[in-house]
Length: 319
Image (cartoon, rainbow, N blue to C red; front, top):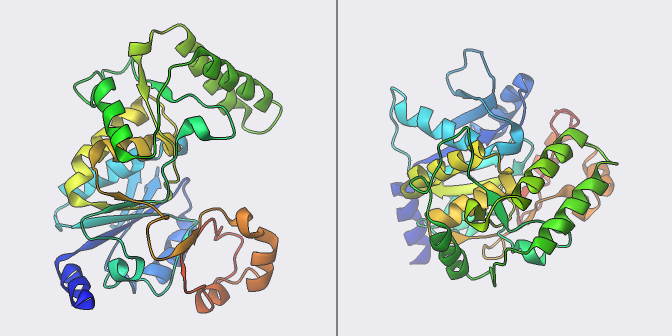
């Protein structure tokens, strides 16, 4: 009876697979096509600054630090396309992620245990419990972008939605937390990505001089793999656009936008399969040596109980 239910759900479902590229890698298009085109009928490559002629490559324009905008721009292009295929779900995956080769558009819900009316995200986490100090708030107000309260829920509404979700215990606008965050960023200047760290330092300093009402509550989470229902897409993409315009980092923006868009969220803790969200967590060197950097070997001997493996850099893995 349960299996019949999944079959009926899949009959009603039309899934669009959106592969998100952080940067322009035209050479990977054909490789990803070979991996997924036989399993997903509706496959789109979402690539920044693409100017080629492939009809299923959607060109987007934004920093990879705010690739929530990629999803929003891709969705608008799909809606306006001449074909106007009506999709029930949008399966969003990173280009350096390999989905279990047994998963197809016909068995995605049954294989994972995700409900047909649920949205999936890798994780949603309470920032206040994380090891490294980060602010639970983000400055939305901007002199250059008109993104007031009419575009997103109010501060109090956002707090209520996040608490109702269940994993957020409390929000507190603490100057000490901002000071710790600033100190952490200053120390990070001795590492890589100095330009980004400097930019973040200025954003934190800005929060010191703004009152609480100009800041917005946020959560954190893994978002390299998403399954979104059509019913949430319009609202979700609007919020993603707002957070991109206010330069909120994607790992804060997407989880926050999703919580504000729907109450039907499921994470990796709730599905039937495990996942390798970061390869270094399972000894990356040993993993790569096992498969000899062979994509064919990985697909032929893929762990059956794993939803996805990330990251698998296609430029480093042989065909």
